[in-house]
Length: 587
View 1 (cartoon, rainbow, N blue to C red):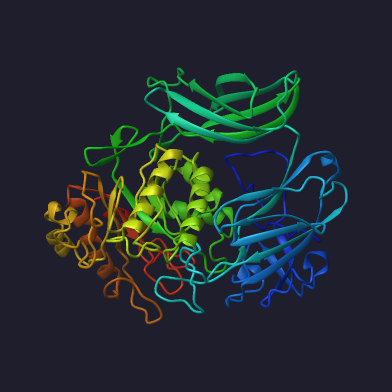
View 2 (cartoon, helix red, strand yellow):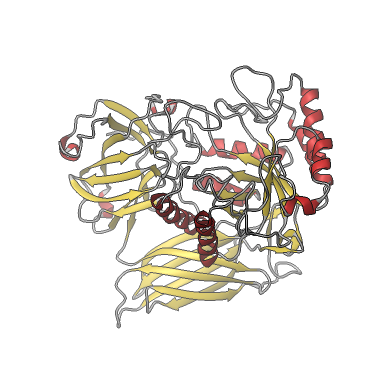
């Protein structure tokens, strides 16, 4: 089958990049299986696929070539592919950047594995099943559901859009690709910067049989803007290695180059694995030297307070839904966010394409990474959420742009958290599990209200004008001790938890919509640009004038289907002169 050209053909994992790979995006055969008969009838051997689909766009999207938004619980994909003969003898790894929700895979009629989860990357070793130099066939079955025990974020679970929930995403929605490895390879490298010690810690995981007498060496070369700063080699005597390196150099008077929105400096790093002098693997990566900390009710970046001016970003596009249509589309969003004077995004209810995080690293855009929510509490929901969240933390750990983890939002999936001790303990468990893997970043437990244990207290309030906001937030003590509900209907803290001096952040506000009967925003809709700016300026200035608040997040960057409160339309056209938005943010 011919591969369609120019369909998300950029390298899908830019922070861990190898030269040799094969993109499997493009046209695939496709079939709905509403009666769930495909496995029984062995469609993985010989199925009747009567549709075509453009991967990685889901069948619900226009870009897929199907554009049917009715929910189908079982869908199948099929295509053939040829692996160039030069990869004969190599390990063949099949990668999925994201596929929602349970993915089962057959190659040349043989089952190779399954994965559960809609937002994380995963892979299968298909060595010995797929063959180089010949035509191979891959068949995929994806099972989705409308269950509220499944992490689904903003995907609706009934047959039509409602509130702030939109068209569901079923099946492959990010790049599918192949990678070719030798018997020895680098599986993963965890990179932890320490700006106070001018050092970077590397934790390596190596694949391959480590035996006495086999000299396997791992070299690491760190450079900045083409200048090699450090280079060292470790003898691989076990599958996991750890090393901390001082990266002090004479580049400037501070001896290191820090990552910050004003100067997003990145160090390049190359990892090389060799056995008995023969090259086995080579991976290109990068890291940023930056520190996130909290002191005296402030969030610090590189030991200095930073006022965060974020915008809510749900990551939807009109023709491709959750899938970014292109690298250029990702960059367009980032440039427009920066143009309007924001220094970060709260990526809301979505784990974004790794290309997005790559460009945020490059451009210096701060990111709050937020988990897609479940919507009911049960043992099944706890298990589903915990497994996927820990994969998310691991997979996104190395990105310097991510400065905050947000596992829960507005009590979604923990709807009784205000009083229910079991649900409270679940959020505590996630907090500490996250910290066990990453003690660098703040963790917000239940963004918006009813916090349990949380490094930042975040409040959602869609009050329309600054006067009312200032009156409500005048007395900080009343807000943080639950004397008054900060937004007239929810309290800041869950029962049994006390405020301990954490930074306070207005992490949702605004949501102003222009008059339109087809959609909604928060508060009364406005008719003119002047009316919009008066309200936007009033509430934003009031937040900034409240001295104990250390940042805000405006709702939102673009319209999303029926929710029309974006600063941009769905197709990214500004509703307001971006310079006027920036002027307010710069007040």
